[in-house]
View 1 (tube, rainbow, N blue to C red):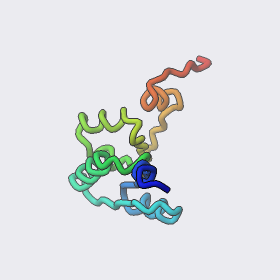
View 2 (view 1 turned 45 degrees about the vertical axis):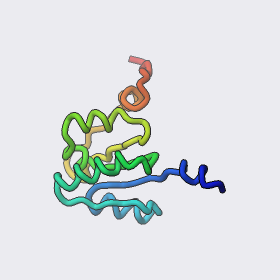
View 3 (view 1 turned 45 degrees about the horizontal axis):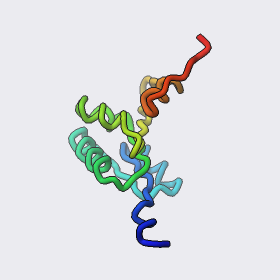
View 4 (view 1 turned 60 degrees about the vertical axis):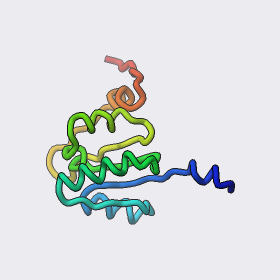
Length: 114
C-alpha cells in the first residue's frame, strides 16, 4: 500500500466512562479513552476531534455534557469526523429519532408519515 493511501486511513475512537470504553475495547476498538471528570472529558474530546485521525468518534453523554455549547454545536454538526453520543447507562435515556439524526448529521429532512 502506498504511503499516500496509508495517510488517508482513519479509524474509530471511543471516549467516555470506563463501562462504555471497556465494551468497545472488548469489541476490538483500539483507541479508547476513559475520562473521570468534566474538565478532562472536554479537553480530551476537543483533542480527539481536532486530531483528524478518526472517521468516527463515539462519546458518552457525560462527555457531551462536559462540552461548551459552542464546541458541542461544532462537533454535533460535523460529518468528518462523525461523532455519535451514547446515552447514559443510568437514568432516563433520550432517544433521537432517525429523522432528527438525519437532519443533524446529514442536513436532510426525512418526511414522516405524520
